Image (cartoon, rainbow, N blue to C red; front, side, top):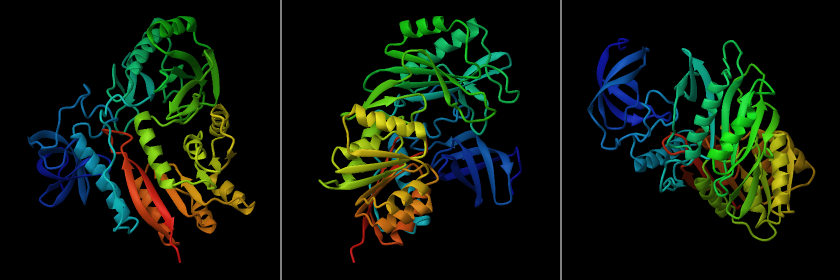
Length: 454
């Protein structure tokens, strides 16, 4: 057991799935924030347990050959957004590919599967078209930025190198507006204050800009001034919305939206399809890689004339509408009512008549549709991080589709669900990781399952 606050020299032998360096000191495991594979570092122990310790870098003795200069001006230990920005981007992709392979093997028992190298970006910066900035006041200073790692303390910022450039300008304008009008920041402890978050959404192809202020009041002073500032300084500014959230919760958005300026929506395109985006709409945050991800899902679906598709956990219908361009019929299922309303609007906007959308829990709606006689020979699932509900998987197995395309944001639950499907008559053909979030440890994955022919 290592002594807290004491320094030890460790060799970093691996990178954990949370981006933390895994070091060894005389065989003892030490998790080192900010350390990279192959480095030798002096570590100050911050937590000591019987079987492991945690620490921070005191000094880098031998830097990793994969260490690069950090583009962001923030120190690594400040912002929790980019866990591995100091790691060479090609190495990031390699680590993400290996993490998918390891989870498939360790959790799913799947070893002899083709896992392609992760598909990365040509320029892995300024890729996010959506941002959520928490607002706080601390020591008399207004702070707008991102949460410090493992905390709800806001780290103030004036720019972020993975966000769209317009976000930097928007934050500056809102900051000045709050200071000029003495508008208070929300306090999570006292539940007092007015502005909780600033949310931005930017159309990748259209340049449309939406600004949402998450607030505890339905009126703010001098809103016309803020609108004029945004109109004059932000190209493409289309709408300003007050999202009212009076709940004592960490959930960012409330249910009530008030349009201060514009229609409360923006338009964006993925490929040839056009989508209407509202404050509550889920839309992938990396448009460039979204086309890559959806293109791969469409490729794996191998749609032909007459094919019927279930798109489970369909969101606002982004994948559904891609599939509907080639399939005979698509049935989309999603628990969020607003998302289904958006999906129906988007189908109409794109003149797509062969897509039907159902709202409700997937584990309830999918079995019901199956009992009603609806069948699909291709199923696409894109579940949240917790993966598919077992009832959904059971219904898919009973339906016996020829192909299942699984889009995952969590390799661990993907591996668990693939194991379940393989044990029930499906074969995992191939897996394609896609880097939707460069400089973080997260990875999206598309997997093709086919029914084993007896």
